[in-house]
Length: 587
Image 1 (spheres, one colour):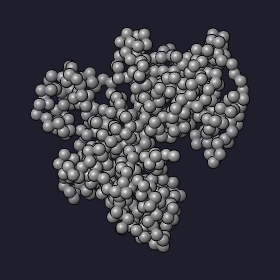
Image 2 (tube, one colour):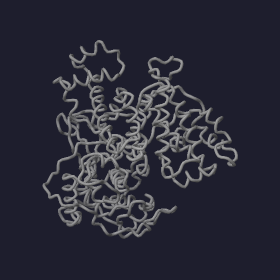
Image 3 (cartoon, one colour):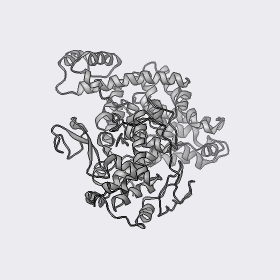
Image 4 (cartoon, one colour):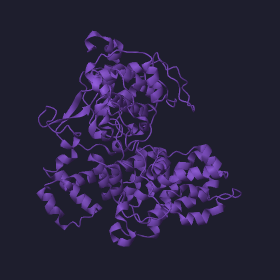
């Protein structure tokens, strides 16, 4: 049985507003209103919490936002516009609170009896999600942003996490998309400066000149000290290098869940004000309060800071880079042309491509490409189908890893919630199982795995000298390279710094490694990686480009030259069916 925390996480893990549900709620359907409000609260809480710097009035503004939304719902003209309408209300309420209060007290000025340090948004996020590395730095850096940038960050972060679109963000801010892009660019520059400051101040020993500069600093983040410290890090020979390997913040945030609502957030005024009057003739409308009661029962004091959107898990890494993290794009190992790489796979699984309540039954003969939105077979169904066709082992080196199953990914959001690595078999059977489970052509999988590792689970790559980027048991020098450790592991070369939550499974289990890698591919193929349109790219990212998403695994970018070269190499292996050649066999 799930714990209370697990049950509450299920409520807000996927914030989507079905127009049919919105319409039913507008017309007085109580069950629809219950579900809609339960889905709204986490999104509103995240927007308001970051915008207000985790101030103790956050829950009051959330309450006011929800009150306006529930009262105004019958007058909403277009159910399709519900989410941007709701976001706009939240932003208006935040702005109104700042205007009427002139300047809200900072967390440090609050009565200690009114502030619960454990409710600090940054500290809460770090503690609950076990943030490390650059995710930890980003969370801490948000404390250094000024009010305007925090307001924008709250929305942009939700955009990067896939909870808002750029048009919804623009509507909420009452700006054009180009104006939003300009403001986001400036805000990200300030955030990057703050990340470098966090690094420099944390260094031990601290730069002597920085220590001297900080003598008059009171220890509290502020825009003034951000400017002073940032100037120092740019001009100081010892500190300047800290700018060199910043992972773009959007790549640290993509596809992640929302920060959980605080247990016990009460909305007494909303209950009293809306009560049975939310919709005329709708009967008792207190039902949604009862439904949310397990999550929203007592007002907490929310004291400080900013990390509102969960920094959660990383997924993909270029050549094992996590889709929700940013590795440095890898250099191609062989020269290739830059021809357009479009999906060429035509075989399909013998299943209906349309979603249904029942998982499709996969064919045992061959697993092909399923379109975006298709209902995917379960891992168990795929295991049955794969085992119906015996395939001998051609990579005996994988024996132990092939007998080892994986684990779920802590804090995962869809589609990564399906990852478990629960399959054992020969290496080719495992690759077929992953292809079946994620609806990708099995020959594409076999060819890509050959490029990545020649189907060797003991393959390691991307050696670096930063000990913080080494997984447990692989410290600097422990794998035979003095002063270095491998960052990428296994048959698909999943990269540790950006996918920590997938370890140790992806290192030890062939099935887990492939399962995880193609969950990431499916996320791209379904169109969830909208951040690809905010970075350099060869064309506009869109769903349904199977080869484009293979290129993203390597380059971390959409149809760039590096991605195209990688795809061309995979296609060459595919045309050769390299896994069937004599030199590939290793019985």
